[in-house]
Image 1 (cartoon, rainbow, N blue to C red):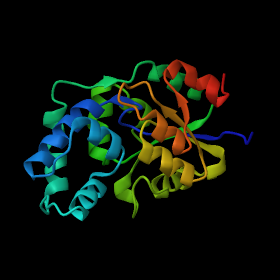
Image 2 (cartoon, helix red, strand yellow):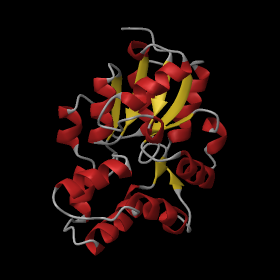
Image 3 (cartoon, rainbow, N blue to C red):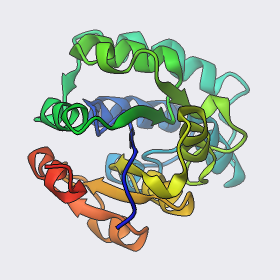
Length: 218
């Protein structure tokens, strides 16, 4: 096995438990524009994608979301999470194991940096990651394309082959695999698309406490 140097964490659904609240609001916005989609469909088909890619996908199907759709989404973020955000159970155990193994680590998310600061801040995790946040807004193409993970690895100074990705979405797992990285796909959420994650090349696990051993760092 190639030596591991860098651990790249996704944010939503891996570090912070935001997917339910975020998708509930997203389907309201999409339904208000006439796009018929359920919560389960949004979780399966849109999860992990940058909001600009969601807009492109929906409008390619013939629906108009308005030029300000992405802006309105980000304006709603403080309201969506005004009552707080929880960290994914036992993610602190993983972060501790990564630090103990003296590995480098960062976050690469479809969300913008401001949203990451808000959600990671509310959970108290921002102290681990405030200087190593990479967003899809920094690259031409977001997940499921590999650009973001390749950008993060380059900025951190490591080869993709010596990097691993921690993901929870099919789009993110696809992106990590396309970047030439091993991808560990968290499926502890009841809405996780197990078949989709496996098909995308993910190594599935359902409890963060199992991850350090899977990565071979304990």
